[in-house]
Image 1 (tube, rainbow, N blue to C red):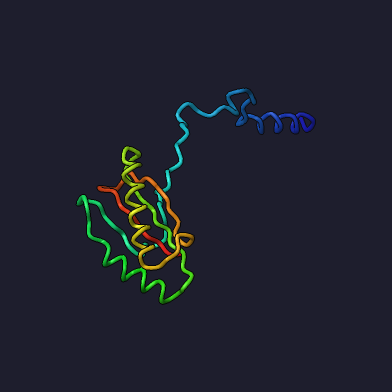
Image 2 (tube, rainbow, N blue to C red):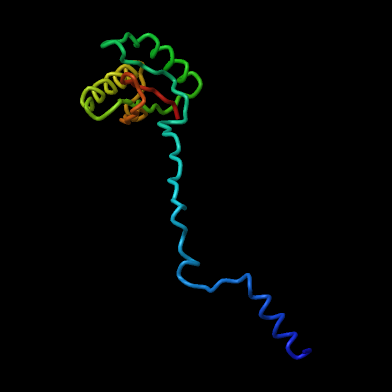
Amino acid sequence: MTRLMPALLALLSFTGCTLIDQKTFAPSPEAKAQPAPQPPVVIDPRTPLVTIDYTVPSPDYTELLHYAVRAAESRDANVQYDVISVLKDTSEVATSQERATGVMRAIMRDRVPATRIHLGLRTDPTLAASQVRVYVR
């Protein structure tokens, strides 16, 4: 009986075990892969010096832009400007480029060389109307 005792204990210890097969490593049918949450779209984390909103066809921005450029130039005579046209979708690309170019020309009238002004174009589907944003570097 003492010789059978270790064999009996070994058999009893395997009663809670199952055989390893393909089902052991396959995911259960209830487990579905969850898509990773999409991070929010950040157009530009910088705060714009000026934002020109085109909810009206021809906003009057020249005076505000003039004062903002003069203030930026008084802080740093070599400041760089990013003039970014932000539009809802790509259907207004030509109009947005013209608006950004107009803002660039207005900055150049304040004696800022074109080499310090950089144009850009971005889309943001959350916008209600197109904008031109002026950032400083």
